[in-house]
Image (cartoon, rainbow, N blue to C red):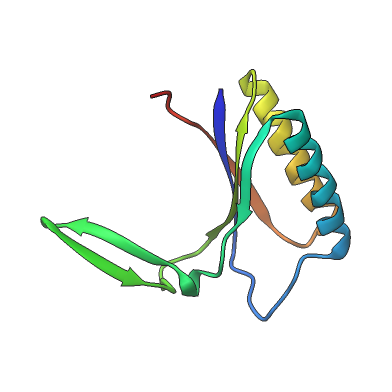
Length: 119
């Protein structure tokens, strides 16, 4: 069963970087998840100022450049995982979030986990 996991948070501005301890812990976590075959792909996303949206409305397409004034939170990164159960996917997402809680407690974020449709 595949799941797409997002990390959502307010956009960090002013060049704030995650603590080195978090980056080290994430490197170990990501390496272990890739080695186990659970993690299929992962990545962080560039700032919302580099984003754009393509909207379909009234039968027309419109390209809208970021940043987007109405954005309260952004998707900062993603991971595609393949697990044997919903419970295993939750455990992976919890471990990911626990690393943030432990190593960057002042950073407020959430992980959204969505099952991928089988085609």
